[in-house]
Length: 401
Image 1 (spheres, rainbow, N blue to C red):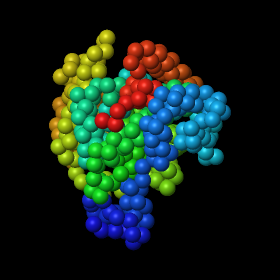
Image 2 (image 1 turned 90 degrees about the vertical axis):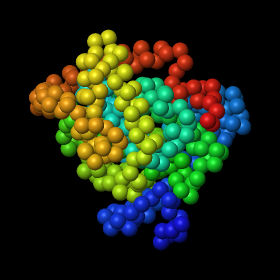
Image 3 (image 1 turned 45 degrees about the horizontal axis):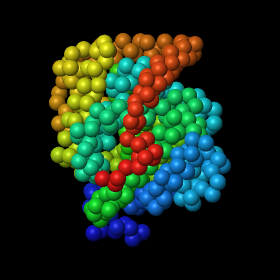
């Protein structure tokens, strides 16, 4: 096994490191180090929950909802986790957190559902290391519809006005997602995950890559439908997602904070992409399952946009527009006859988007309407009796596998 100049072992999953160094300099070696770093605060909580059982979960849930100050004699790992979650970094604008992620809120829910979530998730699966971990759970290809719905719910909660304030639904969901990642990491290591080959499961690089999938790749799909962000909107969107990344456990050293627009995000994604293997059979299996789940979800609407067959072609067209031909072919996404329809849709939405950009009153009204629609959808979804997978884990406990 090779090492960096700092003596850090390079996992077998890393390819073309010298090529990455030529373009990205010391960031390439920093990336290698971060492949061996998980989330120490969240990992310690998992160990503490396993030791304390119901009492630990009770303290954690109360602390997440009401704050660390509401707890008496909080267990040390839970206290440290809550302290970090509740400490708003100096660089995070409180007014921004209260406003919510306005770029997402400016996009009508129909187009957001059609493009953003599946595009982000499928791109995550293009990493063989991430796909391998997910397939090893033995459930994701059959649970793709639930995964899609839960991810959409988390994103909607996290981007709503005030959604990331302490105790708010988006704050709770983000903490729960972070802790579920830690549970998956613990389970994979217990089952003998090969860290020399793959790095630590759900390491800092994997989380940063997933962060980019939602902050960059999903907006490439939204742009394919005609909703392109101005430079100012990009800056505001990434500023908001910096705070989401912080709550998800990303360290400042994972260099996500350097990203302030799509250009910088694409450069960081290039570092991650050039040093990974091409998508494998696991990636393609997860891609096929997620596309099917997306089509099933859209077709189940009370008034579906089109037939299931046409929806499949449209989803293929959106993915290919977001990813380009090479990655689409590697993931098994076929060329689509829906490209002309996508072109017409893009043009119509661009015309509406110009009105938003040119008239602040129109933009504010669109956000207000979209927030109301999202709030109603979230209210209905929150009534589900069993809750999300990440809620179940924190509230009642889930096994490692």
